[in-house]
Each structure stands twice: as C-alpha cells, then as structure tokens.
Figure (cartoon, rainbow, N blue to C red):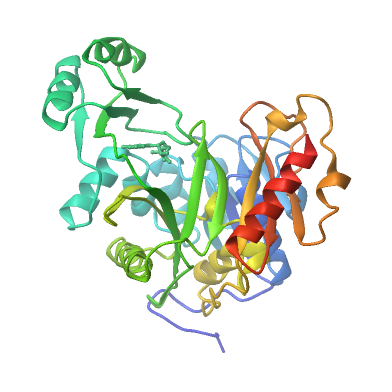
Length: 384
Ligand code: AMP
C-alpha cells in the first residue's frame, strides 16, 4: 500500500531512485538526505566530479540542452527534482516524458526570470518591490524617473548572489550601467532601505499539504549570504504573515517540492518579496542541525509524496557561510573552529577554493540566538 495516495499517483517509496538536476552543494545535501531515507540517487549536470556526485549512486555528465541525455536520465529514475533552477524548459519537458518532474517545469519557467516572477506575484496580489522592465536605455531613464533613485538594475535572467546587478544612485550612472547589460533584458527596482532580510523555506506535498520552516533572518556581505539566524527576531505578526505569504505562493504556483521566498522587512514592519527560489536555500542550511526535519529531507518527502516532516526548530541557531576567500592563506584551521563542541562543520568537497565560492558552512546552536551567533562567528574567526 502506498503511504499516501493523491491525484499525482502513489507515493514513491524508499528503495526507489530520485533524479537530481544539478550537482552542487544543495544537490549534495539533498542526496545525503535521500540516501538516509533509503533512496537511490542519480545526478545530472554538466560538471564532472561535482559535490553531489561524490555521494550519489550514479553521475551523468551532460549539457542541459542535450535532450536525449536528459530523457535517458529520466528513464532511470522515479522522480526528477532540482537543486539548480536555471534549466531550460525543453529539458524539464523532455524529462517529464519519462518521470514526474517536481516542482513542475512551469514553476521553474516563472521563477527563472525576474520579470515573469514579479509579474506573477503582482498579478496575484503579493507585495513585491516596485519594478519596471528595461529593454532600452530610455526605459531605464523613465523607470529611474518614475520609481526614483537609488534603484537596482538587474538582468532579468540567470541572476543570483548579486551577479548581474547594479546599484544606481545618480542619473549619470544610468547610461554606463545600461551598457553593462550588453543587450540583455533587464529590470529596474526601487532600492528598498530594508531593516532586515528574511526568508521562508516552505514545502508542499503531492496532496497539497504545506509546511513552512520558522522565518530565517539573513545578513549578506558583497551580495552573498553571510549569516542566518533562526528564529528571526521579528514581531510574531510578521512571522505569521511571512509564513502565510509563503504558503499562499506555494499554493498559487501549485508547487510540489520546496520553494523559498526571500523577503525585505521595512522599518515599519512591511514585508516585500525580493525573489523566489524553487528549491532548498542557503538560509535553510541550519535546519540540518537545528530542526526536527532538515529542508533537504523535506524536499525528498515532498517530491516523493511522503507525509511532510515537522519543521520545528529544536534550538535557536546560527549559520555562517565559508567562502573560498578563507583559503587565501592556506588551509583553514579546522581544529580551532571545532574547539567549541556546539559548532558543526559542513564542507561541500569542492576541490578548488575561489573568492566568493561557497565551500561550506558552520552551524551553532545555543540557548539564545545571540549565543548561537557568537559561537558561529567565533568559530569562523578562528579558521583564518
Ligand atoms: P538578489 O540576487 O535579487 O537576491 O539580490 C541579492 C541581494 O542584493 C539581496 O539579498 C539584497 O541584499 C540586495 N538587493 C537586491 N535587490 C534590492 C533592492 N531592490 N533593494 C535593496 N537591496 C537589494
């Protein structure tokens, strides 16, 4: 008997094979969670010898444009899911000929492009940062005039970690920024002087049941996530609103799987959506050590049609990213960081450290958020 039946077919039970498109650190932690639940894991990506491949049963190396290779990958698995969302629609359609693709390619199509994503959210009544499409220099000038400066111009496609982003504060910066776009479709957003950045990681099962993790509070450095603490230090009303928002978005997009909502919180406690990621998220890494169910296990449960796990936080927690810059003066001092027994080290098995490259993270739990934060920041400082 399947554990849970739904209109999307019977549950995919342990022992089956899960296919993951993408093979970076998110895929690695997803594969580890899948394996501990007794699944087999196949990964597909253009990168040989990638972080997820080392912990998977099978690695297929191929381009996302190679539809025959994608079809053959999908034939070998019971369900296809993602750790990397910028996969062409043709690839998800080709995979869907042979196995359910979760979340569906239509979710990826919307979230791959900032204009489609913001247009979708706005038309469904969700609060987003004010924005305009930028196709020509004149559009950028008009957008800056109507929304005001400062603003942020971003490429509409394939942006992450602040790549393809220009903060504009003066009118004379518009034209050079426009040239940097090199003809790519762009978006201009009003700069939000946020009080906090938050994220909500939510999961939705094949039967439409939703579960969100407690709200995470994030700080960025050079546009890259630096620290996350949980639970976010916000008014309980904000916590509730943010979680409801995430659940509504998962419902409206008919997501099966995990989706993360990145939010700005203004000084007067208004929530604005910055962007969506149709997958697990860097800010959710602390769930591995501080939640009853990790975000990775939750994705496995959701895409396989198992009941979702409890998202309860077992303790206040903090996470610090470890970027390649830490290797500037040789191997980091792992022993010094681990002197604190409440600090957990996660490394992604990447062979080459580069500035800004995510190599691993540290998590600490504590009796308060501040204690967890001190522990994780102290451990990271001892690495250098
Ligand atoms: P994104 O790639 O859109 O997630 O942006 C990366 C980071 O840039 C965000 O987490 C913010 O710290 C900052 N950022 C992006 N857009 C805005 C905006 N409209 N206003 C203020 N900060 C922004």
